[in-house]
Length: 251
Image (cartoon, rainbow, N blue to C red; front, side, top):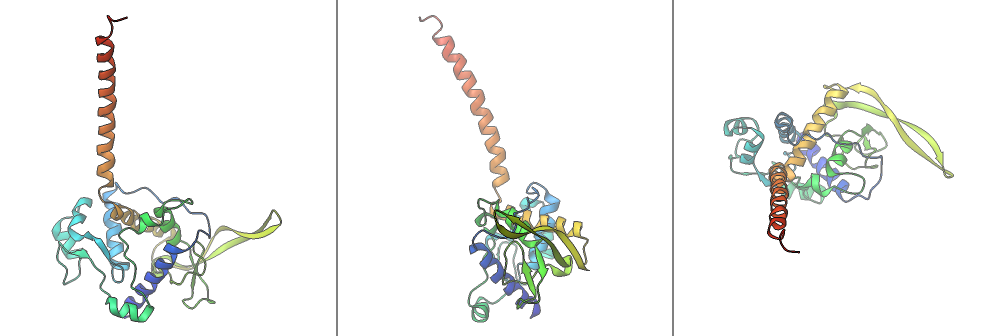
């Protein structure tokens, strides 16, 4: 029950973050790992363990994970629930009717989350990477958590056991007659099961998987696109020289 409640709160927090106006701290650049099979496999594991209990990925089937180097046996044994089949879509285990009754809305689908959050401040991957690493304890909030990337977020830190508890180091500055606070770093209040560097690395893997899941064919499309452009360049060169040869005797 605790896992379901935490996941539902996560759902509401992400839903609010998606429709929130731009604000908070500048976005950190997410590592580019959509071609890293090991990172995508680890990200898929984290997604199933920490997200899929409440969030669906309705446009993604388990067997599509073959594209990141997993076999059907690995998928079935490590990434599916007991009643799931390899050809099923990735559905949340929470009862949608209960979720709506408890929280007023169903948890949002995460298939396209990494694409839907893109904006002028950075990509959707940048937002998710910053958001998941910007939690801090705030006893004034009902959940006991707040977030610098999305102030007054309604969702607790879903990865707090991995990250531990941190406190932001803020500095007050005055610019153009207005006082504001800027982030200078973080103090680790309580350690998590992962070191700060390892935690950031795992969040990078999770975000890479969410980014890959939003368009699994993107890497293939880019590779084909490069060959198409090279073909067009070569054909244009041949056509240009052939045209010059046809008209060389005409003045």
